[in-house]
View 1: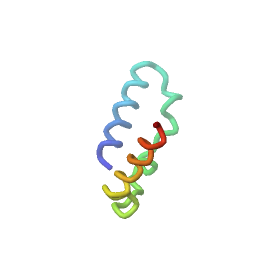
View 2 (view 1 turned 135 degrees about the vertical axis):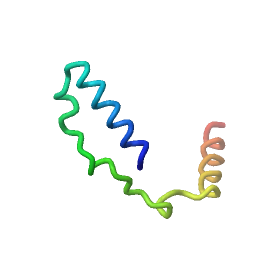
View 3 (view 1 turned 90 degrees about the vertical axis):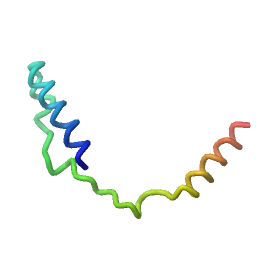
Length: 59
């Protein structure tokens, strides 16, 4: 996932600039790969059902 990689790079640069490199020493490139496939995501129908249930519980 490209977005996560960009966030990681930005955080690394910021904490290096701040002088807190120990905060980012555990960052690695392989840990940020996207392990979620489209089949792992809920469908729009499942989302709507969950939202409806939550709204009914609030009443």
